Length: 69
Image 1 (cartoon, rainbow, N blue to C red):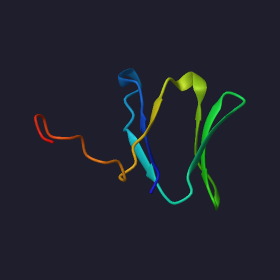
Image 2 (image 1 turned 180 degrees about the horizontal axis):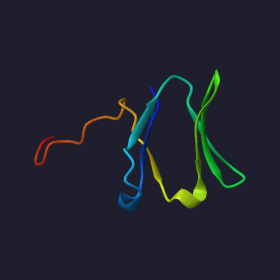
Image 3 (image 1 turned 180 degrees about the vertical axis):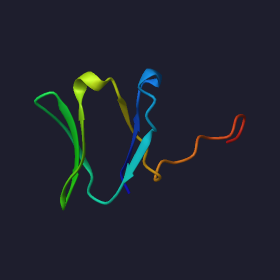
Image 4 (image 1 turned 90 degrees about the vertical axis):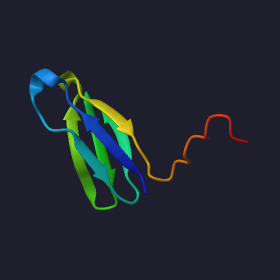
């Protein structure tokens, strides 16, 4: 399942947001980062806000153990 973590700059004092769902899509349009799904827009963030958007899917494989084969 796709998931995006939105991290706001500390000086804005906003909570970080995790958006999860089936068929999520991230696009950049006219100075906005827009996350949508099959029902429409889930979240829109203006580019000037300085938030960082990171994709964090739960389907990622764990890192190998050090020294393991």
